Amino acid sequence: MASNPSSPPAGQIAFDRSAQMRAVIIAAAFVAAFWNLLDFLPAQLGSLVDPWLHESDWSHGPIIPLFSVWLVYNRWEKIKRAPVRYTWVGLIILLGALVLYQLSFWWLTFTFLRHGCLLLCLLGIIVFLCGLPVMRHAWLPWLYLFFAVPLPKRVYFELTDPLRRMAATVATGFLRLVTPLDYIERKGSLIDYMYQGRAGQIGINDACSGMRSTITLCALGVAVTFLSERPWWQRVIMIASCVPIAVFCNFIRVSITCVLHIFVDPKYATGTYHTAMGLVTIMVAFGIFSGLGWVLNNLVVEEQEPEQQPA
Image (cartoon, rainbow, N blue to C red):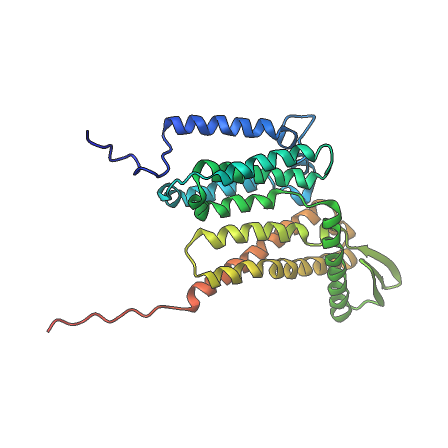
């Protein structure tokens, strides 16, 4: 019998109609098992969906799975060519994640643990159904999903509080150098100032800490870094630069906001203006990051061998 030229070789992934049906059934079972986290129907939203819709720092959450799917699509040819080697390791990971998820409701009552169990269960499904060789190409889309998982409140505060203080310190130094203020002093994450006999205070709140722009830029940066073929050292540099670039741009944002608050109108430090400034900050940070990628791409230029002239 002649073989179908469009069918993949034996031992490789075949995403035919039957495989698509199995994928739909597995996806439905997965959503049902973790419905407490993924419930998107009002008014009882899941513990993972609720921060996406009601907390500005995690409003990027719904976009992350779409990026992850796109990363899978970008690597689909490599994934299809990977040999399928079934392993019981995936089943162990899958069952362990489900057991730990149930325990999180009775014993280890941590919301972040439940979110981790969801991703761990997904990892077990991939490894069990496709094998470890597939993870050579699927590890990034899976790991990328962690950008959509909200951090625990205590951990988030421990990260934002130093950033708030740093932003207040930089803004205070900037205002002291370039503006004609009568008095300015930083107290924690607060900035006390006096201008033309008028005293005031500016508070650097959580939204100004830069965590949102840092997480967003890291998510965008990782996606851009792995979209095209790059040497490993370029990827390390680009990923390592995400946090410094985001923090630096947030310092600029806070300093400009303080100038507008004092010398123009305090309304520019709140509401829609404040949100718009945050979006501009993310765009500027991403522009700097893209410029770094361009520099790295053109830093090393391979010389082409001269064509030999015919004798």
